[in-house]
Image (cartoon, rainbow, N blue to C red; front, side):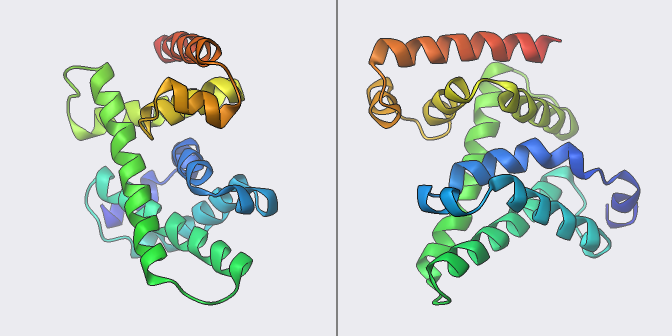
Length: 185
């Protein structure tokens, strides 16, 4: 893929996917200081500059490569915010957390489509899903992410969002309905 990656490269194609991961893994302190959109833009710029160095052969390897660039950028922002001291445990846990979120996203997609098909079709569905999630109202998107990516109960989501359980259930229900509409179009 390294040769044709430069011809097929489209940073916008992965923007919503990377933005979801960045937004999900920036802790509250960092969110007040840095914008996840800037982190994604930096990631895409670096990937665009180095796409000729990418040696993978599959879309899955490309996603993993992009996640690694995002993880490095996020780690740099954490170090910048908290001082230059490195914490190898935190670095490994960030990599694992990004991989875990991506896996949960793919599993959620697979549960929506019983026969996921080949890797290219699954990637297209993943990118469409992340784009559709970014179009949801903030509260609906957050409730769905907490439910499906972190596996939080409605009770826990309510506590985190300062909402009642029926309000959270409504957010999830409306979010899923809107998500289906966006994905059908």
